Length: 580
Image (cartoon, rainbow, N blue to C red; front, side, top):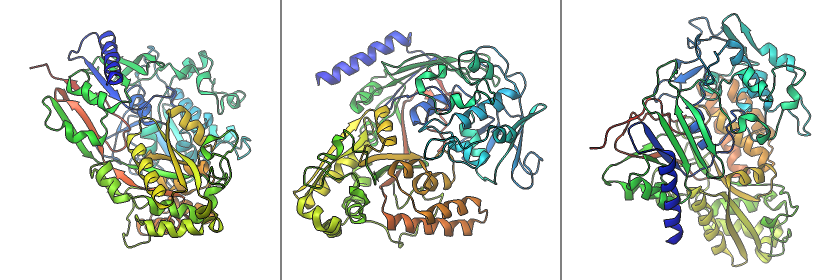
């Protein structure tokens, strides 16, 4: 209780110091996650992206809550085949660039800034970053580097693919990519070329680009500085205190925002988040689902519940060949009851044992209070169709025992094992999923020992990339509204999670590529159905739920517009009514 009071007191002190006063111009938001870097080429976490879309504009924006309808933004038109801005072969996209738009430092945006930003995004390609989202459609690569770290991209090819032609930016894709506009609308942030170069960043030339490929995040000036064209601009980012402040861009080309100050702060204790919201000390709180029902009916609080999401979370991942060096997560490093060998999860029966040991329906009911849907594969239903009669894993401890008895020629059952399941601190549903799996697995055999540990997000990402976690809990929020974004990352050898697991299946790679290139919905569905069968047979991931979204706000906060593609809240249309 003393710890809770101290955290609450610290939060209140921050708000008093930073927000001047709780007035109609200032909005305070408390969230559970942490920001990692303010550089668009580096940030891939939901909290940072939720903030970043308020500071950086893209060529297009989403039309209200629609995931596939767009409006002009930095481009004055939405390209279509009909208006001639998309070529008949679906490869060339032309964007007329808006004139008179200014960056936050007062300089005017040019078509060259747009071109530079796209090239910087795809060529920086930092490990764990989002570059593949544009790199794949534009150049046909998922990475600028091969498995040995050698650069495989030709700069001239990239420069020819993204060009300035008069007042237009023209992008030539390597192959047709149906969701390209959605990717660009979400991820095509525009930064000023000269400003980045003046502060030690890439100058846009062929001679220097390799120096800025896969750079260290804190080596960039953009790590903790921002200069966009969006409705809000950065005032400060207190990394140690996990606090960030934005101010209104009064020169915004669509008109100044009604809110003048935005304060965002990380608060990892969910009960503290609830108290801050109930007391009116914050306007918006990222409340875990298990607290939502407690808040319903609270005077002055509105719950926006069961919001549709492009999300599969939590997902439990197995690493096939764990990095054993100095790694406490695998104990002794041997199958002796006190640890596991690095290749423990290479045995299919081990993986299936864990699959059957998870109580899917109870987790949805008890862990998420029914907010969501049971997951049968990587992508939420709606993007794909799941036949519930197709093979899938259900909670069955007898079947789990059968597979554990067969695993490693019977050694797993006879000797037992000890390992650690890891989740990111503050990821409350992920923690619950890990703890549920622990209880069920340990109930099967007293020789099975499972620890559960939360680590800070930055460390979690590093451990994932280094393959140091034998079994870990994470999730996926769709970058754009297409099943390719899910199946590629979960099942293709170059996908984010497949790489982290060391998973490769040539047939899955082939099907992912065929599904992306296919325009016929019926044929596409057949490819994804076969991929789903492979996901079941290979048992590389435990898909738990597709959760819906939830935001808790003070009732005086108005203008909230949700979109399943957003990873946070777009503050521009929002405002606050006066206290009654």
